Each structure stands twice: as structure tokens, then as C-alpha cells.
Image (spheres, one colour):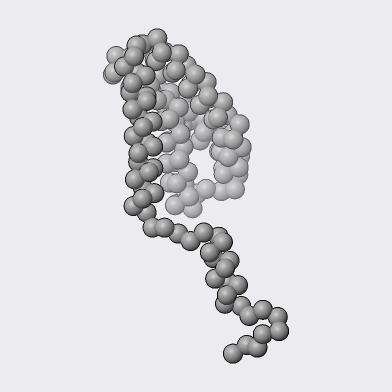
Length: 141
């Protein structure tokens, strides 16, 4: 069944590359646009689909995780390097768009952290636990 996990990863990678090429053609770019990202989203969706239907066996899971741990970071790094080189040659608009995307992400994280519920720190949780448990020699009520 490990082969099934590797096959799932291969199908997602090939389909992602094909869809990335189609997207690049639709945008008028002579490059694969987001093929690795599309492949990752397909792999995540496939894993969720298999898990929800009870079809994610240990062998399939092992095959996907093993090759995902080795293969996908390398492909992402290669694709990122290629995309940066192509983008740098394309002009300043791409750099401005990249900086804007990073700033939007930073602002979103800051907004979520302000809106989100403040949780207790581990020190606060431990202090409450110590306050609830009597120390040695104290009478319990």
C-alpha cells in the first residue's frame, strides 16, 4: 500500500504541473504558474477525502508522508528559485506585488492576534494548578 501513497503524490504533482502550465498559458506567461502550490492543495484535498471516507490506510499514509518529507521541499525550493529569477527579469511590478503580498500577510497576522481570544500562558496555568493543590504539611479541607 505504500505504492498507493507514492502514486497519489505523483498524480497530484503531475496534475498540479499541468494545471500550472494551463494557468500560465491563460495569463500569457511562458512558465508554470503555481503548479507546485496546486499540487500541494490537491494532495491535501486528497488526503482529507481519503481520511473522511476511511480509505487512508497506514501504507498510503506512510507513502505520502515519506515522499512528501523528501520530495516536496526540494521541488518547492526549486520552483521558488525559478519563479524569483523569472520575476526579477520581468520588471518592478512583480517585486512590488511580492512586497505588497508580504505586507498584507503581516497585517493579517497582526489583526488576527488582536481580535483573537487571549489565552493563558503556561506559567499562569501552572500557577493556578499550584494554588489549587495543597503543599505538603498543609491540612486539606
